[in-house]
Every structure is written in C-alpha cells, then in structure tokens.
Image (cartoon, rainbow, N blue to C red; front, side, top):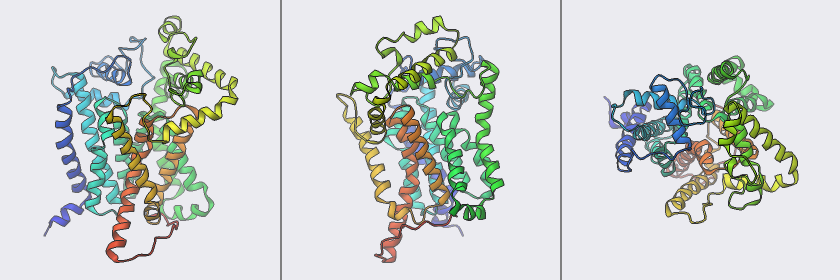
Length: 437
C-alpha cells in the first residue's frame, strides 16, 4: 500500500510536486509584473526575442533588430531563441511576445527547480530537503528577476540541471543525459570547457583513475564526452556553412574581449573589472559606423578582437590590477551601482547566503558527496575563473553559471548535519575523499 512517505520519496513524484508548487507561485508572480512591457532596445533580451520571433515566423535564425537583419545570425546562442520560438508558436496570436518570453522563463525556472530536487534525491538527500532545494532554485529572487527580464540564463540552469539529474539517475541514462548537458554551451558558450575539464580531472589524476574506471569505463566516458560536444559541433558546422570560418561558436567574443580590456575597465572604478560597450571606450568608433563600413558581424567581431588583444599587449603592467577587479566583481557579493536600490541589496544578500552556506557546510557535504559531482563542480569553477580572467566579472554570470550549482552540496551538507544530530553523534566528520558512487 502506498503511503504519503512513498509519494514524497519517489523521485519523479517529488520533482513533479516541486514543479507544480513552483508554477503555482511563479505564474501569478509573473502576471502581476506587467509582463507585456517592452525589453529595452539593444539588450540581450530584445535580440533573443527577435531571433525567436524570426524562427517562429519561418524567416530563419535572424536578428531582425540587429545591424544585419537580412543575414543569418551567429552571435547569439540558439537554445533560448528556439525555446522562445516554440512558445510563440503555441501561444495565442494576440499574446505579447514579451509576455510569452517572461512566462516561458517562469516555466523553465519551475522545471529547473524540479530538476534540482530530483538531482538532490539522487544524491541521497531526504525528500523534505529535496523539496526545499528545488524550491530554493525556482523561487530564487535573483533567478526570478533574470527570468522576468527575459534573460537566457534560466534556460541554461534548466537544461544543465535536467541533464545532471538524469546523469545521476543511473548508468542507462548516461548518454541521453550527455546530449542534454551538451545543450548548455548553446546557451553559455564558455560551458563547452566544462565537460572537457571534468573528463581531464576525473581521468587525469592517477590516484583516482582506477576507482573511476570501476564505475565508468574510459570508452563509455569518451562516448559520453563526444555526445556532450555533439550539439556544439553541429552549431559550429552550421556557422561554417554560413561564414566559411571553422570552429566559430559565436561572433561576440571580440566585442566582449575589447569591452572587458580597455582604459575604462582598467582605470575607472565604476567599471573596474567589468564590461563596457565598445562605443563607450574613449576614441572608439561607434558600432553603427563599423556596421556600415564592414561587411558582416564577423568582420566587426574580428576588428574588436584585434583591438582587445592590442590593448592587452600594450598594457601588460595594468593587467594584474584589472584581473583583481574582474575577480572581485565576480566573487564579492556587493552592489556596484552608485545608488543601488534596496532590491539589489536583497539580491546580493541572497548570493552571500549561498556562498556562506556552501563554504560553512564543506565539512559536512565533502565526505559524502558524489565524486562525479565534485569533479563537475571543480571543472565549473575552473572554467568560470578562466572566463573571468580573460573577459570580465559579473554577478549575473557568477550566480547563474556557478553558484546555483552549489545548491546540491548545501543540501547534502544539511542532510549530513541532520543525520548526525539525529544519531546523537558529536564527532566532526573527517574531510576524507570518498570513492565515487
């Protein structure tokens, strides 16, 4: 006979409950925020929505609000625009596209919470804590804000969280999980480094190689890695067919590099370690002017990349201070605006609590944590540091790309802490390296 304990402990039912509760809160919360309001022109959200509308209308992958509306786009990554195009297709014809984008993000956020709850359950966390973990993701004030702003990061948390939950559900799910995780770089392109780094850490450390191969053979791991890389390979082949440029993932790296490494970000405390639009760099030509004189987005990107590299080479002595600024921007949870509103302080308090909980509970989650997840997290941290040093520090990227994945560790630590309390043990857990499960 099924009891309430069975219903709560069943992973699929538990994740469905998390998703339903999150939807019941997120959909009304989105509805009362004037969801039809326009995204500011020139923002990421406006560009993603324009591409999604173009796909839904059968006009192809085009940024209709960009400088080259008649040409196929390859600057913005495709997962979020594809999600938007599907949502626009199934929505009523009179629905505001902006409202569709916001409600789509609300649904993705609810599903992301369900995935994190399932992941925690697979990591042997008790059902009540899994419920709390899932809702802490879905109802995170920071993620709710970014979702309401039409940002793509919610789809990243959703697809990677779903892939991880599936990967830890058993060896038979390894390959489909790998394909889903492989969608992550098609939202945040730098994520492509993570599976490679994870594989290198897991199979490159001599003391752990034998233990890991007992749970996953090298051939299976290599095939999983190939499946993770497959979506990005397909995307770069599409871009090669359009531009003739091999291995092109996005045409935004040059603009991002130059916008992160210049006199403004190196010397102005307001922008220190951050990013500025290249138009704001003293003496730089406006992008609109470049777009008129250069043939394509790729040519503009090449121009910006050369400018960024030239600035770095000419300011080697300024780089240590700039890198410190980038790392401070990425890691320290304090507002940088001159007159930040109270909501921004609340958001950074949320970040601070996540960081503090993750660090304070290390003695509790480390001994029991699945080693595969530890390798994933280590690769994620390393990837984030590399990206921040090369480009810039951002609270948005730090939280959505890295810190949200601290949640399983935090709740595994709480699980261990509660287990010790219930067992009456007062012994502090040892920081031992457990074998992978």
